[in-house]
Image (cartoon, rainbow, N blue to C red; front, side, top):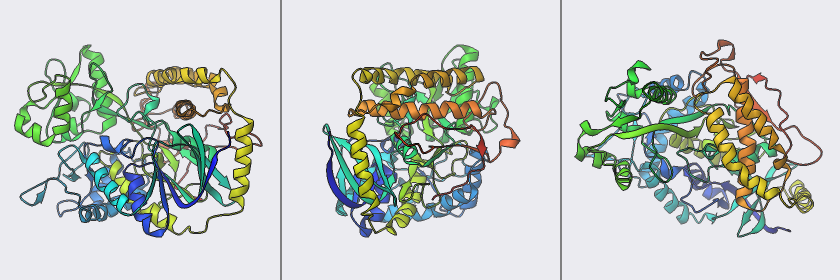
Length: 546
């Protein structure tokens, strides 16, 4: 099928969450901006963000304290320079959001700042109680439409076009047709890959597409063994798991076992405000010890406070017949957030020229081995603004190398459409790999399980050499590629650090401090979906950019 060439724009942004939209707004005056969203413009994980934006704004707090909290929560494994950039610029983006009309929760003119796990101060800026992400999206979408940013909705980006000048555009599928669009710079803001697990808090469309595309284009992926599981998730009788915001514990909710006994302090001195990785494992171990459910108990906070402070949680639980003002919430961990991602420098540049990454898809180094609560929205805002500044400097659209590669791309696509029968095999692989990752590459890991996972994934590798037009099948390929990388990295890191926990290596290895596992595609003469050429060696890989 010959794709339709849509010509050129100045900047392509893949993803319409907070990172993508904030980048687009800051690029709007620098040229033509095109945002491509897999589904509608409100899709993705931003709308699910209940907690808020962390920022040290007032006298009893400081960016230095925020830095240390972030560093310690990440297992002292993060990039302190990157963390410093994020926490120092946090007040600036908060001020900009207020200028744009964002109304953070306040009482009598004073902002109501809350505390979440492992934060040493009340520094979480929230909106609508527990509707921060949803409300931020409204404001950013409103401003984006005022700036006349162009949007393609329900469009699945399948491929990054590359030429001698680097990344020069994208190929995407919309309405059963394939389109090409070229640009001077491409920014990946496509989110993470939580759907590779069968139980997750993320959006159904979070399938690791940006990670897979970037890898195939030559970008470097790092720290994929670090995947955060949120400790407090409610599993309703029907439907998807529902996250119970960390702010609930920040306001004083208790973690209790079936007998009503608080147990968190047995696992961490901060109790319910301990880091996510520790509490997720604590809940799992308490359930295994008692063979009974574990609960979040808010009842002592008072019915009026619960309904006002956590309206989203209250109403969602009530839909399932659970009144959290009178009943405890049964909770269990679920897959939540990818800590690793595409390696970038402090302006979002990747190893591929003119290709940038921002948000969950990127690995800036700020999260270390485990993310501190409410730093995800902040990261998207701070680095979105930085990416826009760097990308705005790229104004010349390559008219030589880009066109040559487009011709090569057309020839390759026409030559290698999928053979009959492969579509059913690819369609069947999703639930199998989701279950495999949950059981073998999940919250608790061991050598035997990880080796089994790698072996199973390698049996599915031939599916990566097929070509599909259907979005679901392309997503499955991306999930397969990233899932195999995660399993290999987890097997290679023979230690426990942050949210990567090995039963057989329960302590951190000081020799691996600051050492990262990276994946970079080895150039081959044919095909763009090879098996992984990776030696499993740890590298001291800093934020490199080009």
